[in-house]
Structure formats: C-alpha cells, structure tokens
Length: 388
Image (tube, rainbow, N blue to C red; front, side, top):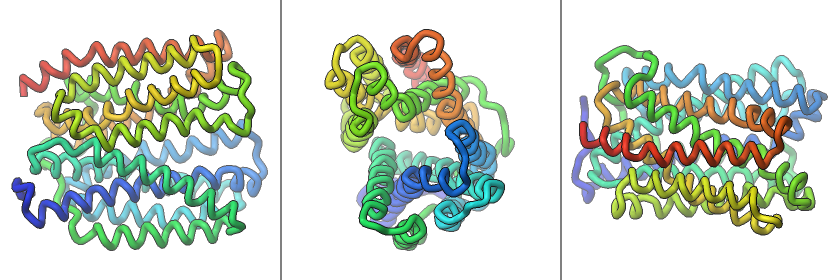
C-alpha cells in the first residue's frame, strides 16, 4: 500500500492534511445547506408533517445503502475519486432539491443526495485515518471540527441568503459554487489510494469493530436527540417561546464545534479513552441538568454541556477503528459509520415513542443512562488499544 510521508514538516504531508480538512468542511457545508430548504420542499410537494418525516428518511436510506460501497471503492480506486464524485453528487442534488415539485422525483433526488452524503462521510474518514496515522499525532478531532464548522456555515449562510431575498435555487447555486472552489483546492492533494485491500469488500462488524459501532450508535443518537427534540422540550416542558427554541441546538452545536477544535490537544495530553470517559459523563450530566433544572436557561446550559461532552467521542472512535486489526479500514469505517447513521435514524423516533408514553424528561434520562454506558466502555477500549 502507498504511504503518506510520516514527517509532519514535509510539504506533501501538510497539503494532504489541508485537503482532508477541506473535505470535511465540504461534507458539513453541503449537508447542512439542505436544512433551510426543507420548509420550501414541503410546500412545493404539498405534504404534511407525517409524510415529510417519511420523505426525509430517504436521505438516511441513501446514505446507509451507499456506505459499504464507498469503503470498497476507496480501497480499490482511492479516496480522491470517491470524495470528488461524492461532492459532485451534492452539487448535482442541491439545485434539484431547491426546484423539484414532484413527489416521486423528490424522493429520487433525496436518495441521490443521501448517497453523496454517505459516500463522502466514509471516504473522508478513511483518508483522515491514514493521514492522522502518518502524522504520528492526534488530528481527528480537528478534522471533525471542520465538518461542524461547515455545517454552521452551510445552514447559516443559506438562511442568510434566503432572508436577503434570494430564491432557494439561487442560494443553492451559491452553495455549489463554494463547494466547487473548495473541491478544486483539495482534489490535487486527496489520497489517490485508500486503505489496506486485504479481506472482503463487505462484512458485518465483529469484535472490537462491532463494539465501537455500538458506541457510535449511542453518540449519533445523542446528537439526533438534541437536533430533533431540544426545541420541543424547551417549548412544551420549559415554556420557552417557539421563536427562540432553536437556541437549544445552537448551544449544543457551538460548544461541540469549539470542543472539536480544542480536542486534538486535549487527546494528546490526556489520552483518547480518558476523554471518552470524561466526555460521556459530561454529556450525561448535561441531559440530567436539562431535565432536572427548573428553567429554560438551565436547560440551555445542559445542552451546551452535552455538546462539550460529545464533541470528541466520535472522532476518537474513528481513530480507534483505524488502530484495530480485526477488520481492514475499508470495511470497518463503513460499518461503524452505518451504525452511527442508524442511531440518527432510529434514535429520535424511539425518543418520541418513549416521550409519548412517559414524557420527554424520561426519554432524555434514558439517553443519559446510555451515555454512562459509553463512559464505562473506556476500559474496554483501553485494553483493545494495548492489545493492538
């Protein structure tokens, strides 16, 4: 297998690291640009909330179906090819998402958009594992921080364009222009190879990979819980005005982004497993504070703590899957990413079911309990690292 120079000071290594950061930014930017378009798409196709929820599942289905193929292609053809094609799929899909008014066609476009999101997610993480390993230092949190920053820029930028009077289609043309420029900067230095090619192209996760995948499921489910239910909790339980209820997710996203940009130094100083343990405990405490506090201000502080705690859990888990030897990366990365996305898809509806039966407070406390389980897993991850 080709290798990246292990000298952190070398020009090629720096360019490969920069291209990886740009790829993560593109993924977050392109994915988040869709969020402000959802109300417009709902109005164009004339569906209700229930049908819209089913429609949005198409994005997740497209992602999950594509992920194993993306890992196999990255190993066979290279990360550069998969990341480039995936970004182009985003560029193709976004204008159509802003224009299509036919329900069956919108379903197809969402599946294609989801395929692009899933493929770029897998391939950029495979590249990140290779580049981080070659650098000899922790870099994964910073890479994921660029994804978070891209998400903020995509959602806020499109929202600002729409508020300024731009049409959804015009806003998407601006977005794909930005993606095209960023891709042109990154593509020459994306890796023309993938990871180790031995082993099957597709395999069910096993051993430590399955264990890491379950932890990813819980971490992604936690993010989905805040994304989908924080505003509902603030309005229905804490009496917050609906116009301000988005502050819950904003507090979470802000502290998560900051935590990821600081994460590499924290991981280098304290170790990945210690950060997972402390981060999961912090996130669990955040949910407890949200539930047990008596005001929306305290709830916002709780969501901020959840963001701090969760910020580096997923990046460290991706680093861990790059160190294990049970399965090759081109199989292991799609496996844990698929389980993570399953957490986003399955978790929020499950929280809604529990919330309907016992209240959202009880549902959030269950998530906090699962996060305590993630914290308890730190010993298993540490033993696995020692074994490899």
